[in-house]
Amino acid sequence: MSSSPSMRISPPQEGEAKTNEELYQQFTNLVSSWPCSPALSNYQLYRHDNGWHSSLAPMVGTMVADACFAARPSDIIVATLPKSGTTWIKALLYSTVHRREHPADSCGHPFNIHGPHECIKFLDYQLYTQNRIPDLDELPDPRLFATHVPFVSLPRSVVASGCKIVYVCRDPKDTLISHWNFANKFRVRDGLEPLSVETAADYFCDGVSPFGPYWDHVLGYWRAHSANPEQVLFFRYEEMSRDPAEHVRRLAKFVGCPFSVEEEEVCAVDAIVKLCSFEHMTGLEATKGGKTELTFGVVENSSFFRRGQVGDWENHLSPETARKIDAISEAKFRGSGLSV
Ligand code: PPS
Image 1 (cartoon, protein in one colour):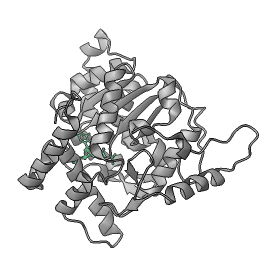
Image 2: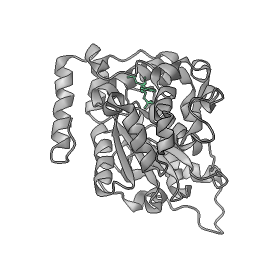
Image 3: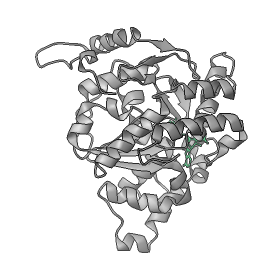
């Protein structure tokens, strides 16, 4: 589906005084007029003009970022659907890019104090929120950001700048189960009944999931990767789990800082894999006691980690529901070169 410029609000022009509050309010009014429906999460999901769903604040943040974010060619953007390996790829990217000043095996690594979501912030959930237009100009290159937005709705400057985009997708059934567990935690916190996995699967299959439909999101980045592999890297969670070291090497090469022979000799890749492993990250104080502020509230860093396994869906989904999701994947991905 193509973007329809008529629904976009122009960024303030030079000389046109528009306060941050006014800009946010304009987008809030616009999004509030769009169709919305209840969802697995404790929030209604609005349907964006481009056909995807999100709760109000990140949807508005996405539009403000589109209007105001000025990407640089040297930026690196992590793009994912929620619950598909965001925390992991953020950790791998940050520790790879910053390995010279922060060796992965040093005891003072920033991950001891800051979780991956503080090291690489979301444009939509953390930076363009609460009426803020963040000043990102002073950040040193390469600037690292993240987003959950579909490719079609990335801030226009991201695609135009030619900056690198690192995408990770995950088996939809595991993404669903991970999100179902996460969302129910917040439903219970807010005094709502947890939803059954069947209800969650119905929402998911209908495309009513954050930044969903899942399949459109994955296809958007897959096609962008196929058209321009130099700009968009496409990883799969399952393949990362099978061979994390090889993915770290590919990531480093893609972002322009390949591992040298000397680094390979001292096992720098393995050190990064170990630092970012589920087992190591879950033991850190920053995970056990740290918190991250997102649009929907302050979240304990521990809630970004649950089991970290491939195929956990088998413990929750009926064979029938699994078959239904696989059939949708097969139909949607047919002819794209992507397999289920
Ligand atoms: S979020 O909220 O969108 O940032 O969540 P996201 O990080 O995308 O997804 C959370 C799931 O990823 C698992 N996870 C990891 N797997 C492997 N290695 C590492 N280091 C790692 N960190 C987080 C996390 O456990 C969630 O998956 P499930 O299946 O729920 O365990």
